[in-house]
Length: 317
Length: 268
Image 1 (cartoon, rainbow over the protein chains, first blue to last red):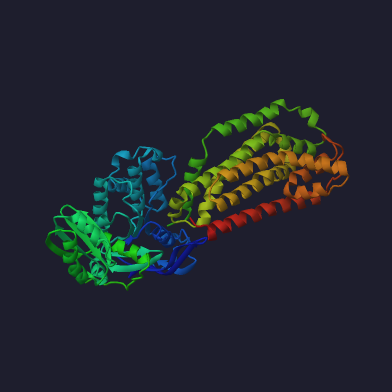
Image 2 (image 1 turned 120 degrees about the vertical axis):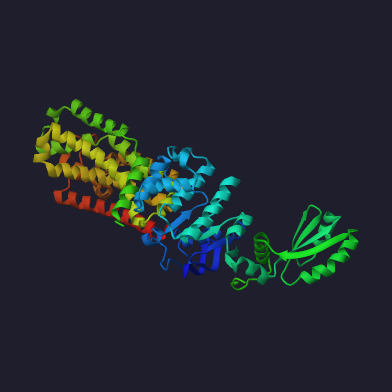
């Protein structure tokens, strides 16, 4: 069952097209990542899903219902905003207890979510006195008050230190595993997303460029990373970077990591010996592996710069 | 889940954000009883209705009216405007309430609580000190409060609300509201003097639709007690009611437009 079903969504701000024909499915019990560069339409998409913005075109359904001004949908939804803001004249625990009453939960739930967000010691502090990281953890606690079936999070790890990020990722996995909570998470921190998301939607220029299971997507797109071990990585990287089918070149340690467009691996293997000769570099080895989420994201960006390589939804392999 | 509980909680939350009890309430109390202390009640005792009108007008006079109208405008423009600007409204929208209920809770706090406190304190003072005015001339007291609340309080509250929603911030609407509030204090005597100077009551009749208190004032005071020349327009009681109804209709239309915009169109 799809908890979120968006079809052909479009939204413009004046002449700026933020979302243009975006379709998305989020299955119950899954953790889906929404990935894309700044200005790709992630936040606008999330706002339309949450019923904060009305689409110019298309439709969106959450729990099978229209989200716009729908209290029934809101009562089952947990929301974490990138820059969460709360009424400031309250203490942390007092406000969460108020939110418990709003959602018809026992007030003891406030202590539970404070504990989940590791804010037990901040219960008596004023909300306006919380640091950015603590405010983000407060937003996470706030989103879990109503024991939601679906959590939509826009950059939930923003402002969190590494330890808190790790704890949040563990919490997400725990909630999915123990309570079957579904997550739709937008984030720029792709390595983190790739550790928890089973599926992703790559967004660029207001469209879903590709979506589906992460591994299957990588295989389907043919997006792979080739690592070349060499004694002159900088010189070789410069020459490789000039190849038209190369989308990414990174120098790390004693090697070069190269990302190429789908189906171009063989050409790279043919070109590397020639380029190594030009760069007077000695090749110690070449190995090709599945692309990371970060590389897939770069593919999406590249697609928006001229090459339209949108593909169908990729099923788990 | 009962819908009243979330509404009351959001309302209570808005009250906590908007009000710092009891500073202004004490001011209202002191001002109200101060008016009774300095008022020469003998001088007002022309006849019962005029006395009741003048007494209530004095209670709702400068500076209390200006302060509380500005307080209402501040609550709307700064409170709601800041919620829209900073994103608190997104948090409120995540609660299981309709947008209409959220706006109702915010307005009840921003406007309703202020008016209830001020009018409540004044009616309490009237009942305590001149109970016969309330019992004998309750309709005059009611009409005077209605006219004073209609304009500028509710009229400007509606306009500032609409502007705040359209701009999604409160600074400019608040400036507009305060300037308009001060302008209201000037326009009524200005219109009256224009009418006196030109001999035409058209300007007064038009302005009385916006500010029904002018019609009420002309009806009860006639040509008496004016700083300028004689009034050219003394409306009948039916005309006063007509202007009052027209004034409230304008206010209602502004609030309905604001509500509909908030409910159907406002994107965050």
